[in-house]
Image (cartoon, rainbow, N blue to C red):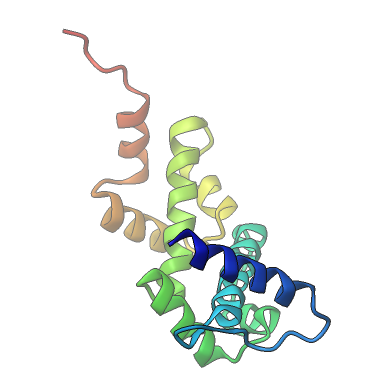
Length: 149
C-alpha cells in the first residue's frame, strides 16, 4: 500500500508546483485536485468565521469571501458540518460564550455581544436550548467547587 501513497504524494507535489492547476486525476479516477480544493475551502471558511465571529456574519458576505454563490456555500456547509450555515455559526458563537462564561466574570449580556449575538433574548433561548440551562446557571455550575469524597 505504501507504493500507492508515494506515487500520489509525488503527483500531488508536482501538481501543487505547476503554475496552471487542473484537476489531478490519479488511478481509480479519484480527483486529488478536487479534494485539495475542498480542504482549502474548509480552511478558508473556518478562518473567515474565526476572524469575524464577534461581528455580523452574513451568508452573502461569507459567500463573496469564499468566491462562491450563496446556495453553493449552504450546500458546502451542510455537507461538511451537518448543520445549516446559521446553525453552524450560532454553534461556534455558543461554544465561545460557554468558554467565556466559565472563565470570566463578565456579565452574560456583554459576553453575548462579544460573541456576535445582537439580541440577548435570542442568545438566552439558544444557550438554554443547547446547554439545557441559562447562561448564569451554567456559570454557577462551572465555577462552583465540586464536592470531594
